[in-house]
Amino acid sequence: MHIDATTKPVGLLGYPVDHSLSPLLHNAAFQAQGLKYVYVALPVTPGDVAAAVLGLKMLGFAGSNVTVPHKQEVVSLMDDLSPQAEAVGAVNTIVCRREGNTVTCYGDNTDIAGFLAPLQAFADELRGTEMLIFGAGGAARAVVYALLSTLEPSKLTLAVRTPARAEVLARDLATYDTRQALRVAPMQDAAAAVQASTLLVNATPVGMHPHTSATPWPHADDFSEGQIAYDLIYRPHQTRWLRDVATRGACTLGGMEMLIQQAAASYVQWTGHEMPVEVVRETLNQHITETE
Ligand code: NAP
Image (cartoon, rainbow, N blue to C red; front, side, top):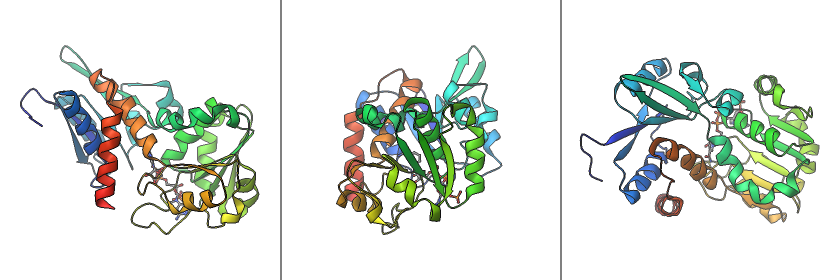
């Protein structure tokens, strides 16, 4: 990649950022399309987020992604927000807009579109049914909003280890819960909901590389044919949880497609070009095969 004074930087604000695949995937896409952008991971310690956003504006960044733990904090630092980012209370994409000497930051949340993309093929069978999410962190917020606003679950259970955090999430998103589907269950009380749900989503890091023998739900007998298990983890491709679920005849989705689709929805906003998804998919698969 040839970088010169006209190359526009795009950042990733998070802490830590060392293991992110975003620089690899975005730079592969810029290179494939011959676009003069470069994507750099920027470790920002908690407390320095406002300075980092100002830095994006002052240093000519086209924009940035935002990851753990800053997605919620940057919301109040944006000049404008997409309806999705406002609803979820989290920003994963910043677009720097320049007019003359003035730069403003627009915050969006592309995790929602990224999460929904692989579910489109199942939308008809899932609509109006019972669903469950393991976890109530930042990603779970996007998942709850995505499910409530598109698939209208009859019940949507948050199976969690810290109910107080999940109660806050449920309160924050209550406006979108028009069917009063949301409920919180401590993990140990969630078996009936696990068995009854047609869609199960793992929005915890449990099972992620290198702790690949862990699973958010160790009772494989609770799964059955007709269920869809969606693990947001993308490394490994097939987590232990997905393998367990597959042995019971359920359908499985890994997190790689969400990673690619949320990236594509950010990329087009920075560059005005559709991301070359096939190039990115191939780059990521090769990288993960080489490093696992
Ligand atoms: P987060 O904000 O830190 O939230 C993590 C959630 O998992 C919290 O609810 C936490 O519970 C729960 N949790 C953590 N360890 C647990 C354990 N041992 N047992 C039970 N619950 C546990 O993280 P996040 O941003 O939501 O990310 C969650 C996962 O989604 C990560 O694996 C991340 O890589 C993945 N993700 C993937 C994509 C994608 O594009 N594929 C996008 C975003 C996120 P407490 O509240 O009790 O701590």
